[in-house]
Length: 215
Image (cartoon, rainbow, N blue to C red; front, side, top):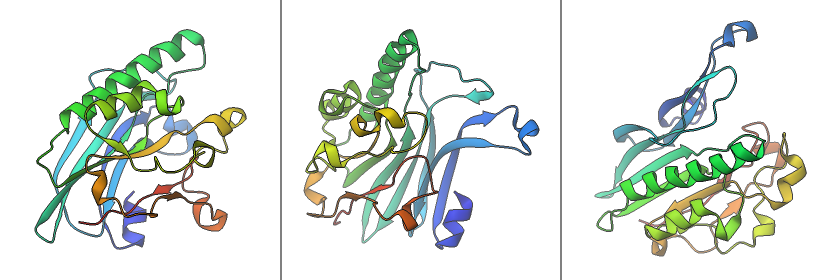
């Protein structure tokens, strides 16, 4: 996150989600986490480690989390949260447990930041929510008056994980979302998924998504 922020002359905040405890055998220290990058200064930073956790992963120590920051400009403050919800593991018991825990994490986050008096709250990241419009994770955000910024796009155009271990299921998966509590500020026709391989590939095992809002 720091290297990317410096490359684009941006402010940044990062929280650790997992530490790779066997990183020494892989040539160095390693952590996995969530970050917020901004052209404007970041205030009111907060690390959120979810109360609901499951599914220990070999070689990693930690738990699913989110990072929150406030961005102020034009006399307006926007709350921005970056998160990574539970995926679960491959056996059926872990899949079911992961689905339950993921919905609980979504409820924690959407309840904590449900504030109709705020100018705007944006929650983005890898939600690991494969069931599209009926996914319990999505329903938790909708219950707390958050909206899917990419709702105008057909699901078949929203594949965000074309490579990796779950590639065989990729055409059915939309794992990455941007939820916002004031959908009226979404700029029409501004949402999309990065489809330029020269620009988009290599940042992650997922494809970047984007949306613009007018404050």
